[in-house]
Length: 120
Image 1: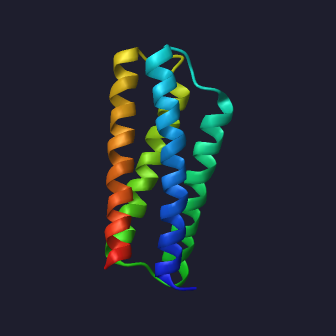
Image 2: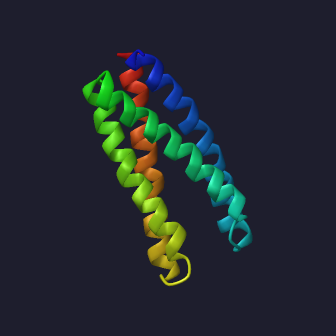
């Protein structure tokens, strides 16, 4: 298995997860209701699949440094996403929006770092 193939597969999975994440954000902020649970589950499964593929690549064939940094950033992003998902019930809306913005920013940074690793 080549690292470039693993990175490209992860990029496609993350792009799909980003589409679901944007749909969830639009539902959350436009309608002021929670998105359907199925959307968040698919979003999380796509992201976890990408992280699992990158982790496998890191452990077996090795990844470029940018991809390793992206992997760490995506792991932190997943933690923020989990906190956002669980926090809607007990956190204040202003705090949730801050965590959601951090989640979005870190996910975008991880995606673009991975994209740069695939181009190198």
